[in-house]
Image (cartoon, rainbow, N blue to C red):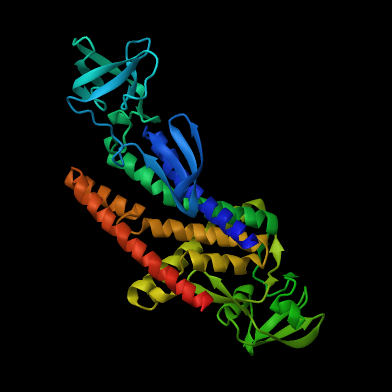
Length: 417
């Protein structure tokens, strides 16, 4: 149960920051945001404020910001339609009622002759006395479809009405905020825990960990592992991480006395790879400025590492069988949680960087794929045909779903069979 809560909080935080980036820059560009959703699937909770509904959905596997004009949300009124209209004190239409059964006070009917709900913002038709009438439509007008209310989106509030630069910023802001989240988490982690120094000294030991069971103690200095000299904490960590479930002989100095301890690093899933951990911490020092530098450095180093892993995948040095999906991430979270809140924070930052990088890949249906189409638009001087772009993204979504199924099945086989 604790693992499930940790997984939902971690993944929810990462998705929230990602979508917050889209949301903030969309609003800055004047784009109407219809929905800010955390999770996918059926709606569990919803709260409407202003022109946006904020929802939490059943499946904690993603989220989205639905902007006006991105999907088929435009209301089209064809000649001959009979709709109800309600006028405000400026004699503007402030509500269109599509279902004649939903009668509202002060509403009357029009048989439409012409209408434009995006650019010219008017409706023209014959009233119940067969008189031709024309009304302007309020920019804040609502549409009532069988009791479901939605706002009309004037053309200048729609996503595709904005410049390539504004749309690109609204899209790239999602991955950008994932990197910002990672930087903040690494920085806060350093402020509260301290900044690791590079001395091979043991400052703390996790209870019931391989190090504790082997007799390693706080203050011990590791001088060698398997006869290989250890000069820094980086050397120590690298050997441990590269040898999961492999017995290792540690040469240790304790109060001037030389000792030899055998420790077997525990195997821990860390994203797409398995690493060893023994449950020890390096010496720490506290500094606000140093914490900020540490946050930036860790974000950069993890970003480089993940790009290197992607390069290995492309060159065949890294198999698709080594990829992890939601099940793998859940199991990794379960393992990381055993080593405390600080390790969970570190894991959150690493996952956030992963999500940011994955979304920047120039693949259909991902943020990077959309940015690629914006690049084509900037070069050509005109947008790519919407139907063609939509078809490419649809195919991309289907391929990503297939990949997700394959990766999830591999996770299930790896952890449960």
